[in-house]
Image 1 (cartoon, one colour):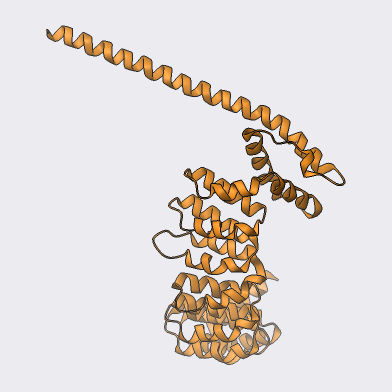
Image 2 (cartoon, one colour):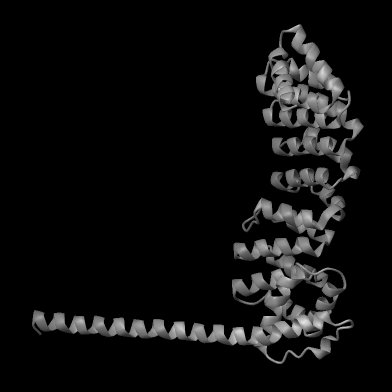
Length: 350
């Protein structure tokens, strides 16, 4: 075979391959378009039926016919969006409908099937429906090989509102397959004050520093007053500075009077600037004259960054705090420049 004939044969083969690729691409587009048209037709039938069902005074789940897999998928997708918007009896009616047609049980089964997109969508539906029976499946998905599925499961667990999910969410912050801290935090916030008792256990050393810090932070935000002693213990002795700083902020948000002495001690003994800054802020949040000894010492410490934060905290303490700043500014010496700077900023704001 000559070089010219070999070249011609290769050119023909490439041309044939290009034609086949073009046909395959067109075929895939045609199939996708056909699927989209079928889905649109199904949605056009299911949507009005679903809205009509919800508009009835006493909706009967059996009256809504779901006779095909496509209709079931359409019902699931429509319901996932609606559940985040409905409240009261309308939401309960939709939950009864999903239960009656086996949609929620199918979603639980899909959490174990191949296909990350399907598992993630199943988790979203179960969370949106607050289907408490799905707690085991959603907990299992926190260790899914796909990161998007793990995040979907964490969000869904929060929407269940069950404090039993707290340990698993905290544990998902470490290990081979983790969930982002922001996703875990939002999930725990969704559970709300009911999570406080379990978050106290999250301060235990068996959890990672990231988990302990989030537990401390959320105890302050959720009003976990029963954890004041544990937070004081974390402020004093936790080996991780991030946890100590979070414990200080939590105690400040709670406004626990007995936290004053430990916070003031931390200002003196603590070596990590971030922890000292959080401690200063916390003393300001306690308000009044509580913590003035510690804040005054921080103001006169000679550390400009710490003194500025102490001055801001004294402003937060109200008239008595501003009076202390004025005396410090007039007396001169350490803390006077920061006191004058803060007082000037307060005056300009007014």
